[in-house]
Length: 156
Image (cartoon, rainbow, N blue to C red; front, side, top):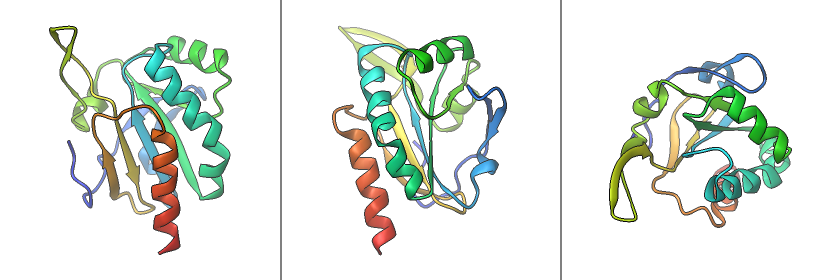
């Protein structure tokens, strides 16, 4: 896991907006990057829909939101269309960014061990520094917690 108060690793990934998104594009804004295991699965759908419901509040605070998984753009586009998601999803099929952010690792499910995406969220500041990290995210109310954290930051 990358530590808070360190520079966020720069990356470039294919986006559902038909361009490549680079973290450099968001310098001067706050950015939420959440890493999730798989499109259209129960937990990931709930998390994405929760961010989607709050997207206008994030935007009002000058914050972009991006979801990242190892799914293909084709999968992301279907997922985005199905749930009318109003922000971009980024495809990391070769796991470069997942590994850079140290969210690709050993997971356990029903007694089985396997490699997968560890659900994690990063709040990145206007100058590209990591402000807050959430590891092993529990989906319920997570998007709301991220928004509250950003709100509290801006009140200081």
